[in-house]
Each structure stands twice: as C-alpha cells, then as structure tokens.
Image 1 (spheres, helix red, strand yellow):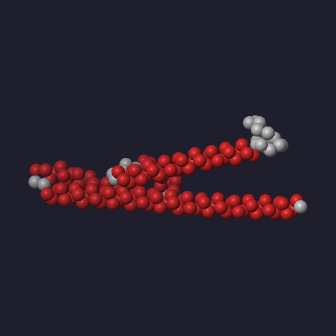
Image 2 (cartoon, rainbow, N blue to C red; image 1 turned 180 degrees about the horizontal axis):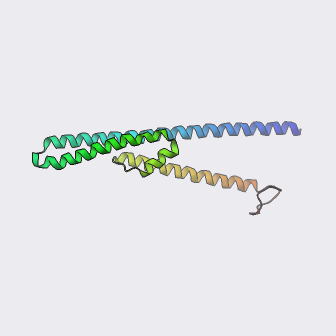
Image 3 (cartoon, helix red, strand yellow; image 1 turned 90 degrees about the vertical axis):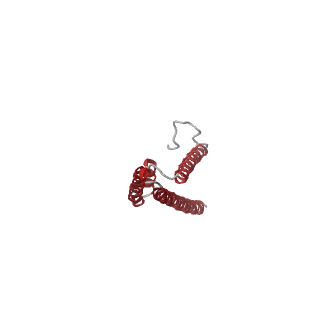
Length: 154
C-alpha cells in the first residue's frame, strides 16, 4: 500500500526531527552551562587575585606599597572591565564565544575550560561534517550512482 508506506515514512521523519531537536536543545543547554561556568571561574579568579593583592599591599612597607598599589589598581580596573564584559551574555551563544575569543583571561583555569570548550565544539563540528558526508554517500548509492557531478536530482 503506497499510502501506508508514505505515512510510515512521514512518521519516521517526524520522529527523527524531534530527536534532532531534542539533541540540539541539550547541546545548547550544555554550552550555556559551560560558558556560565567559565565566566564564574574567571570572576572568582579575579576576586581571589584582588584579595591576595590587597593582603600583599597591607603587609608591605611604605616604599614597596606604591608599586603594589599600582598592581592593586590594575586588578580593580580589570575586575570592572570584566564585569562590563559579562554583558556579553545578552548577545547569544555565538556572540559570547566571539567575545571570549577576544578576552584576555586572568584566571588560567577559566582559560583552560574555555579552550576545552572550543576543542569540544571543533570535534563536534568535524563529527557532524563526517556524518553528513557519509549520509550523502549512502544517498548516492541509489539509482543515480555516485557521480560527483550528480546531486541526485533529475
């Protein structure tokens, strides 16, 4: 029965689409969580360095306090700049990643987490491209053969 077969194919396609949508939603949610963790790690790192610098300034003599105060001012300015740059979270995921690519991390752990995120995204993209190529090769096994100039349409 051709009508029943078409209906079955439509149901299969809908199921695949829903599964793909669910997978994309979970990927986006994971990406958001990882970006938030990176930002939080960076903020905590800056705060920690700021507190360490304050303690060092308090413990030093008057002569060395001048350079320590300059460093403390630098850290405070960096903290203010960092707070302003967190507004990037209003931009969406691609804007956030772009901003973080240009951001000069102060916390090595946050920078490491961001690099791991980038590596993961690159790996996923490569897997997706490979899967698409495999799907195309499977599709060209049909009646048209695997002619590179043939896109499968008549």
